[in-house]
Amino acid sequence: MPVILEKKYKNGCYLAVWKIAESHDELQAMLPSEILTDAELANIHHPQKQIEFFCSRLVIKHLANSLNIKYLGIKKDEFGKPYLVGCNWQMSITHTSNYVAAVMHPNEPLGMDMEKPSEKIRRISRKFLSEKEIIEANDDLEKLCIYWSAKESLYKLYGKRKVIFNKNLYIYAFQKNAKEIVGRLKINEIDENYLIFIEKIDDFILVVAGK
Image (cartoon, rainbow, N blue to C red):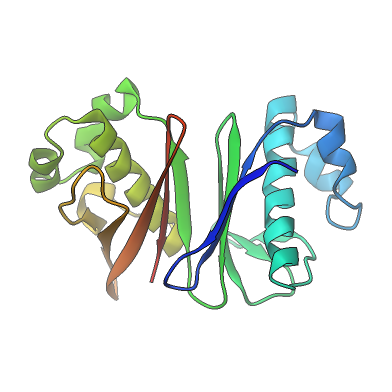
């Protein structure tokens, strides 16, 4: 099983990153039928999307097993946020074409994202950055990617809709080589700061947001 990174952060959050190397059929065979239902699979038509689906469940299963938590599968709430069945542990998942990652915490909400710096992020930067953040990013592609992934992680942590990225989410100024930064979520009754951890894996940037 190609878990290439597994660690615990200082806030009690557990991370596992899986590099996809198995075939579609190998991955499907690793999931018991009580976790992977035919109804779930019927809604996912593209083979690559099915692979990402299998891996997201397997990496969470791996984390749960390592933490002695009985894994009964994943469902989604009314806003589309995934949660563990029959378990109070909080979790978040993310995937790219090459990797799937998951985080878990005993009680605090989490969010995560994994992206590769790209020109697309630069093109849409004014849609998700405040004026101050645009100045601080200074058109640096790697920093823009960190800003995007950090805000995407805060959005997933919040777990509800109607979030305006350049108004409700803010990332405090940081150095490009930082391993830990701070973000702020301000929406409705919430005005909180969160820790955001950064990992660089090959050409990708992985970020995890939590208390």
